[in-house]
Length: 398
Image (cartoon, rainbow, N blue to C red; front, side, top):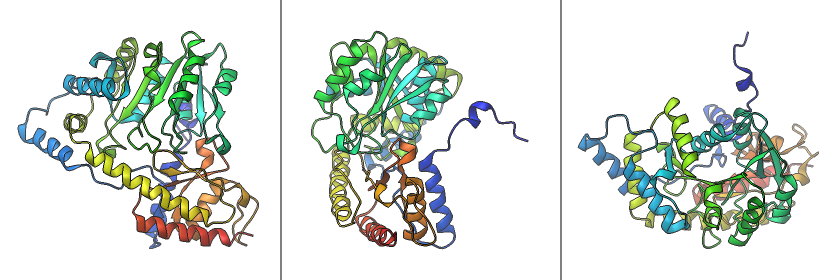
């Protein structure tokens, strides 16, 4: 007998977390698996951020419940960062700090969606967007950017998908899983479409902002008329290697920030006080460690792309940001090695884990079923060896 709610039963399991669990199961059996499935920096949190957390503990001033939307000085620091670096018009009253960008996005959907409201989702998309919309009783509407489009759906596709029920659109740039980056001109085209339709909101997931190889990062909320229509989502997990600290935030219209604050006050309340002090050091402190990490990712990107070029029938474009490559492996569908047959990208991920001992994630969960996601947030040595093992495993498919 199951007493789980219909709401929970309707949710899919996170594909990235599921694949990480499968990889751990293989490792527990003594099989050496190279993990390229999780979107987590392999770097340590920079020292000055660690030291800020230690200082906060030693001072003994941050052991009480923090304010629900975050400490005023952190929200002020975030607002100043967004003004200076992103061109956003905002104050601390537009900021709500939550337990990671995932929590921030979930809060937004639960705050703005009524049953039946539609959310247009740019595909490839991060695995949790669709189920977050469903959890808030909304309806996901998918528009897909193909590999020929560098995984970026066009403004014309957006226009065509809008209906009277459209409440919001969401995209990530740089994108997880494709590494695609929307240029300023491309974001302007999206903004022009949105501004023709009253009350549609844009949720811009910019968590990979600092891992951008295309040049200057652009924020859609900076365009004229978009400040009141945009919720910018960001955090500290990727650019500052702070995944375990769980600090993310939104910047949105004040009415929206108040709504998220109200929701958060009845669910999680404010996040860890010590993690917030660490985040303040990240906002105010030395950015060189972040730049060094981005440079390492750029080098690793080329390492992976060079290796993929040596694997027959694997098609990849050149990602412009984040730390993923998203190759098309559909040539292998219908082929097998005598024991396993590859019918889809999930089969491919399981095959590469079972036979190649490399964990990747199938593209089905990202809205692109012909692809697999390979994370290059791993050491050069692991990446080189993993690509050798992938090549050898694919060569067995006939």
